Image (tube, each protein chain N blue to C red):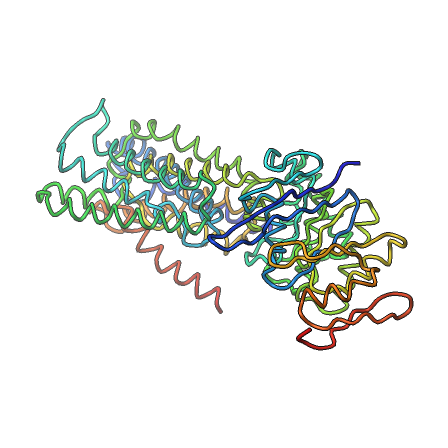
Length: 313
Length: 262
């Protein structure tokens, strides 16, 4: 067990450290600039976003006792996408205090939707599956509004919205990194403080309640923090598919379901997975600047299927 | 000593259905109370209402002299421990992690919690299971582990929901003997069961002590008796609608169901 943990950690750190070296453009005069001003912030961003997505995925799966529960199933991505399209249609090219209006709109959209879910959870009357269903309902409703709005939008806005929805680490420098860091750190730290309560909840929510866990508070804190962290990530990078869903399952397969291991290792593995995917995107198609969201989905989907079938066998 | 649990006119409804219709019941500190009744009588609902898992529509619950709804989660966990009916976990979490969740109410280090968890597993005779994944346990093993979780919590009063459900006869006796030991250590218990005969094993380690048997029917207390009460067989016959006969053997009662339609 200890060996497996050590091997996984070594692999993860190696992947993160190697990722800036993947891809062309490091030779010649501009090499240092490309490395320090483009690749390194991109890898750091990949770490933050991957850690937040992997960890919130694992936390939501524990909270809902459901392997499909991740922030995007409870509406985070749908809310952000809707926010972005609204801005693209109504306020094209607007800036809000230096930040691009798209970023702010994505953040607000993700936050509003997920806080709505956290609010339902905070009433204490709803059971976990009810909360999940409310989340799916809101996702579908946002999707309908999105499609309706898209019908009204011009070609330009639609194209931009589609580009944004692919999810990418490429348009980013140190400025966005600095903006994202506090959100990501607060999310990771606060979620990890809930470890003991989440450990108890993994043995059944009602039993955890009888053991003294304030289940409603844990739910509200975790959903709220997930909204904050994932909202900030989506705002900066767009929705990046599959990391939150795949990474916890991957870690569970390799290291078991013990929450004390699963949660922090999902953060680390998420960071490594996203950096690696970004590196692969650069290395595979050097001049196309393929969005990382395409790679995470293209790699993640078959991996997940393979994982499920390996479980059965 | 104050009473462990007092239910005062407790009503719980689900829509128009009345699950508990004004239940008044007091469990004294250190008392063993078996709660019997047909399916749907409201036994599990009563335990859940006590724990605060089910809101009351009327009435109130007092735990160790304090209003139950005003208790913090950790205080409640100090007074009341619950053995849920369906307590099997499907996740591949190691046994020791689940047992340690029973230590949530304590302010202690992880090492202390683990030590307490291992000693709880030892008390149940299943220390060797500590690293096994929960989803690989047999029914009997899972029940021992669930009891170990409760043991680790060290509550003053045990709320037990059919602790011998799905167990083979030897395991059933083992479980009730363990509960008898807990009782002789001063814990109170409110134990939901269908099998009155198993209560004999609770009483064996506690000679001279009275095992109280309370009948619940359609959300109301039907009788309040004891294991040694000669009237108990008659009460049970009325409660379940079958002929229950008390047979005396080696100085204690055995209850036998002789046929339906009393």
